[in-house]
Every structure is written in structure tokens, then in C-alpha cells.
Image: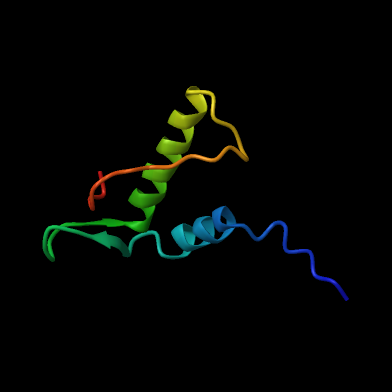
Length: 72
């Protein structure tokens, strides 16, 4: 029996984690009192996805992001 895992992408698992742990801290930075929740992180990822789409990127395109160690 062969399993079809095509629907189990990184996006799929990320969405499940955001849904399940929405109010929990996802990233901590600059000390204990600075963090963003999974819901906030999910929103930032969605905003980035939409911004890339406006620049013409589409599903399957490969990109690279260079930046510092910061949630911004």
C-alpha cells in the first residue's frame, strides 16, 4: 500500500500548528517580555505570501530571504 502524502506539505503542518497553538508564543526575541504568538506569526507569514504574490511570485517559485536574526 502506497501512501499519498502530497497534501502534507510544510504549509499544511504550519497551518495546523497556528490553529492549535494560536495563543501560545511562537518566537521570543529581545528578552522574555518580547514575543509573538503563533496567530501573529501566521498572520505575518500570510502577509508575506500575499506581498510576494503581488510581485508576481507564484506557487512553486523558489526564493531566498536574507536578513538578520529578527522577527521583523
